[in-house]
Every structure is written in C-alpha cells, then in structure tokens.
Image (cartoon, rainbow, N blue to C red):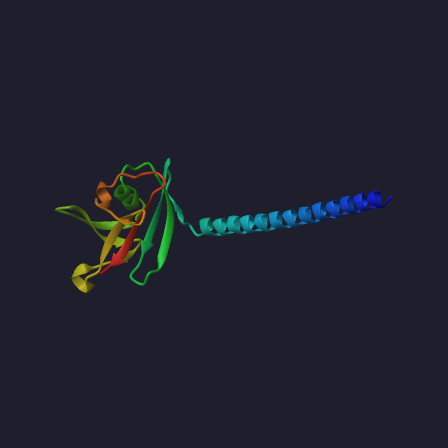
Length: 151
C-alpha cells in the first residue's frame, strides 16, 4: 500500500512537471512570435519611406553616409549591369567623366567638393574599400554598395 502511494505521488509529480514545462515552452514561443511581428512591422514602415527604388530582376542594397555620419539605406532593383549605371538612372548619383572613370561629386542630392572642403565620396563594397570605380563595378545580387563622405 505504501509503495502504491509513493508511486502515485511520483506520477503526480511528473505530470505536474510536464504541465509546468509545457507552459514555459509555450510562453517562450509567444515572445518569439511577438518579436517577429515587431520586425515585420518595422520592415513595413521602412518600405513606406520610399526606400525601395527601381524595377528589375537584380536587387542590391545601397547606403549613403553623409559627412555627419547620417545613413540612408535603399533597396535597389535594376536590370542595369553596373552599379554606376543603376544609380545614375535612379538620379542617386552625379559626377564627371575623368581619366579614371566617373568622378562622383553628388550622391543622393549631397555634394562632396574636394576643391572646396577636401571631402570626397569613397566607394565601398560590403564594407571594404572598392578596388574599382562605381561605373566599372558589375552588380552582384545581394551585395551592399556604399558611398561615404570622407576627408
């Protein structure tokens, strides 16, 4: 009789532990779902800010960092072959042809004038200083291309 009571108590304890663990796991899942919904809402907000530009089968991220460190980020869609052609077509880039290709003077309406204040537009690919000019850089799907004002 005593062993039967002990067995019953053990089974009851195990059942209570299982129920408690189920509540804990369910609670964690709800928190993850909430954070995913928040992220989705943020994405909707970003898209409504007109940060998605162009039409085409190829997509890349374009960042502009001004002299104060303010960042603008765009999702670019294009059928152009080079980053320069895509950005010029979308009126995000202006410059002059020089001996070494396009000399970028204005990006997203912001001018960097080396003659005036020794600033210029530096071009980066996935955070690394680019070894080619923007007009000679073929677009690679999913890459991030950045122009940053530097001195």
